[in-house]
Image (cartoon, rainbow, N blue to C red; front, side, top):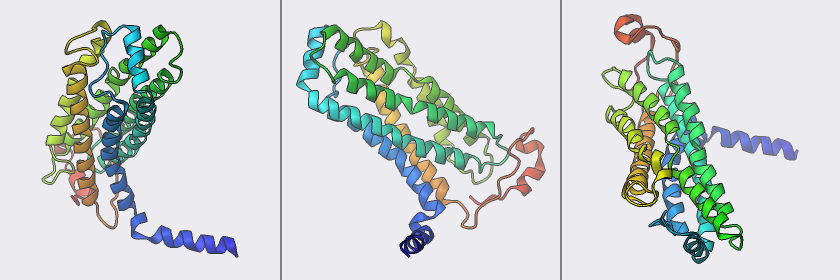
Length: 274
């Protein structure tokens, strides 16, 4: 009796509008904005705005951690959680990319795989930061080394984002329909942004200046561009979701060998509902 009542309740919820596929995808799109808020908020809460300097000695670095211990504990937890929100956005982007005619399956698959790998840009730094602040009574050199590992792991791993962003840009560019699924400007954003993420690759050789982890290029420029890009992608995904047909679409020709202009049948085979 109880289980029958539970089944009936779940069935009612399953038919509710807020449980529809479109609502679920909207939630995935919004998750990108949440990821940006949590990611930026983690650094604010931890007291890393502005960041501790790379040229500080071990004693000064540890004193900074002691002065901000509670904030750093909270910030590390928020940083880990921020990565959770990136996965739904990545999945929604991949799903919407499949609606683009003549797009080979490898493109959305590459975008999805790169985004899934990129989550460690949030998770690992958060875990490392929590370990750094866990025992501040240890030798100061160990805490300094962990602090350096945190900043290097947080800002250096741009290659996965370059692959993800360029795969997404490719999909946007090859959608030559009169009403493309994504606006063309998001392709430009996703081509330029990962290029701007590359300066921290040399961060481990620099202790001060614009290219250090506390500098105007490696921290401020990269961080601001990253957050803006996340918000832009979220809005573009939600825009694409809003253009979905209520009765669904048939996705075919996932392994094309020609471009649209060479295959006139593609235009008629795949519905243009956007």
